[in-house]
Length: 327
Image (cartoon, rainbow, N blue to C red; front, side, top):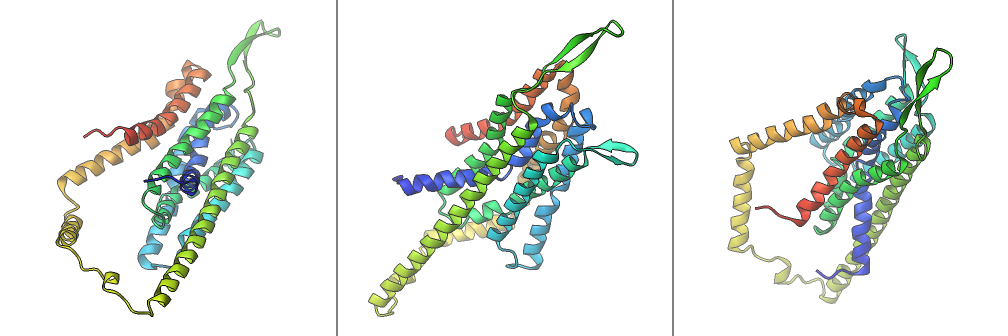
């Protein structure tokens, strides 16, 4: 397929749009080594974050039920605009109030951070059932660019985190009791600046979506005008090519698709779904929640690199899988 300037711009916009799907939640994970020493939850903060993200799945559940019981009542473009608005507001407030604390049940907790993290997780989880259906309105060749953008949602926050670094812990002498006290060195830039960087990435994703909507609307109007002009030239008479007959090969493929739809719940598919569920439970639930206890005792640098590199591994594996096919 010949790539034009317009096509390249479309691929770039689709990738930047896909980047906004999980960039906010991924940015929270890679920033944990910096904020875990500041917030009152301490080493339990990843466990709190895991539970909050799990509750964010209420969003896609609500969208699925709406499509099931009230089909056609939800417009994907407007729902995506709502997701972008919630994510932008939450990210902006997170940069301002991430370190604020409040008393809950007699204990100090970072209520603003946890609440805003839930809103970000709600938007990210809901994007799973809205962004990809919206992409079905575009030609098929742009789907790959969308998945590349989802990989960038983990890569860009990791690049910010690597540039930020992590405050090293050093022991300094204490003149009062002839001992040592812990002292954290400052990062290259603060969490405040980091969250504003994430806000900028969300702005880029929202602007890319707005441009995609504008271009798709203009292209659709031009196509309708061309169809109307050709119909007027033909005098409104429909040719036989307007209603092509199905070939035997097409009928065969349709029959196979029907049979496959009826026999989805095979033992092999159930086995694959169980493996997928277990891998997701370990990757997104168990391992992140205990990462502070497994890595932080080895130092802030070890914890920081383990979090960042584990998030880079996912997009790197996806890029390799797209280039190298293993049959």
